[in-house]
Length: 142
Image (cartoon, rainbow, N blue to C red; front, side, top):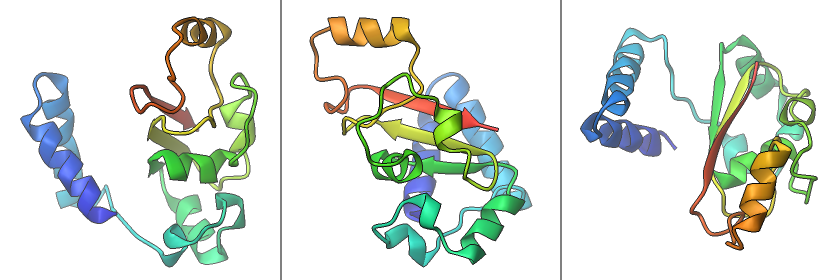
């Protein structure tokens, strides 16, 4: 939601270090029109991104980068399945019509694109890292 993006940028502005610098760049990009926050009825539909309508596909094709935020959008992007955690994020999102980045706090078992060493460390921790909301990730396919 647009309100979520604006709230996130406000919080980043108040954050220490590089986060506030990034927030400033994003605010300026929004003011200049080089960063747009958009919405579409599809975002409220219970469908995977593979089933997106053509008008939305066209918007994503023309974007330099599409940012998808949240656990549900991640599952809609990669497929809401219990993948091998090492499965390729790039392969599973190859259908997406342009560069895409997923920003997500883990709240479900669905995850892909992990390196074996990272996966081993998380599994050894004994924590419910996939579903607890204590871990997050950013994945990008150009």
